Amino acid sequence: QVQLVESGGGLVQAGGSLRLSCAASGTIFSLAAMGWYRQAPGKQRELVATISRFDRKNYADSVKGRFTISRDNAKDAVYLQMNSLKPEDTAVYYCNLETYGGINYWGQGTQVTVSS
Image 1 (tube, rainbow, N blue to C red):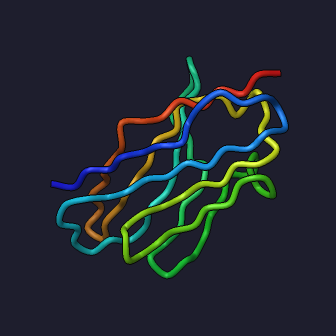
Image 2: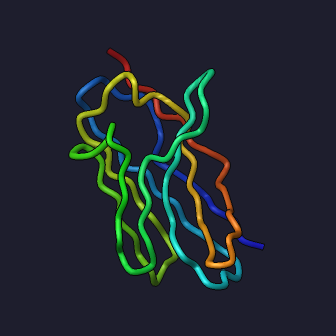
């Protein structure tokens, strides 16, 4: 069983920065990509950024130039550096791991709150 544990969320003022971390544990077969999604109150969960096993990165338009995703393959960990945060970035952020077989694993979520 794969488990994802996130950390690094919190409260920050607009313009500030936070760094999210996610560590995967368990037996992982055919890891394809890891990434971050977020869900704000009353909204659907949306993609923030993903990074493939071969470091191909994909960002939502709303975070391009402000957020940076990275990973440590040896640790099965993924990170999200968030700079120039805006109140609209407020959401619960979820770590995701996808396998080549199409199986998705999710973390429990970490709250990010940006005050204006």
